[in-house]
Image (cartoon, rainbow, N blue to C red; front, side, top):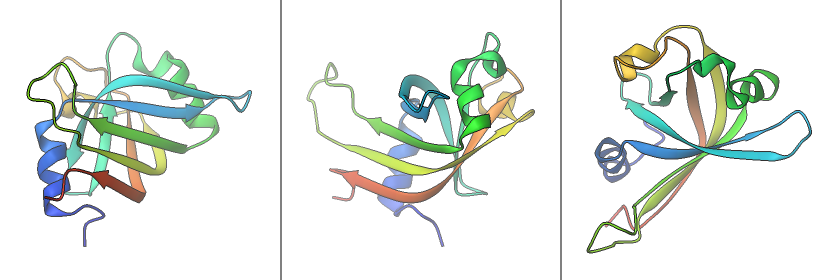
Length: 125
């Protein structure tokens, strides 16, 4: 059974950008926009990037503390603007391979988030 409803999966598949929140070594939050893909086979959120993804702060944060939050919502510059989104909390695993499966131009390194809690607004209608 999926952590997501059918409407939430449809919404995730329609989006390409989200915001990942990690916890730094100083216990302070760090939030950055990232590209992602809903992995239907594993029911996970897969996150990747390019330009040295595995050297970035977010990657180091996940290695030290896997607890993350991830938000996907609509861009208010797109009209008509509809308030919709998802917040996903869970644990992220840093993986050395798989990023190119998200997007061929991405680095090999990636994260895989296993949802523990999903909250959505405006999506399940």
